[in-house]
Length: 193
Image (cartoon, rainbow, N blue to C red; front, side, top):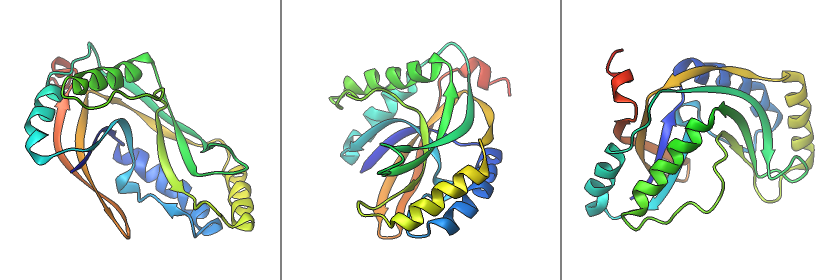
């Protein structure tokens, strides 16, 4: 079972992203575009886990706590590793240190189960598209032009008080995600809704 923990992207943000993505897809149709329904903020990629370990994973994630909700802003765009040789088109996530602290808390909780500590720094983003190793230079040029024409995107914001555990199944058509469980990290705040 391939698992990850993530914050779900709110519907209003997804709709805004879908409208922004549509002309970009036309500019670079061979990129692997992530469906709006699959957009999420990954907090921890757990990787392959045995099904018998699922209960233990859920138990340690249920114990993750944070003092308050987290304000997240979805804005900006860019490429990993860079614009000249892009592998990923992303949109930015702006949040206080609380989001990174949540990711670290999840990472530490899972370490107790023998799940490897995250070696890379936490860089929150939404993956919008992936590009093959040898991308079409003309299509990438059209994509860069479309990005400039789209301007500095601002997709909205949200306050979050929970995260989710997802199962990812890799299919020829792309990844398919199934939410397995949800966890309130600021329960006193989310219970009052």
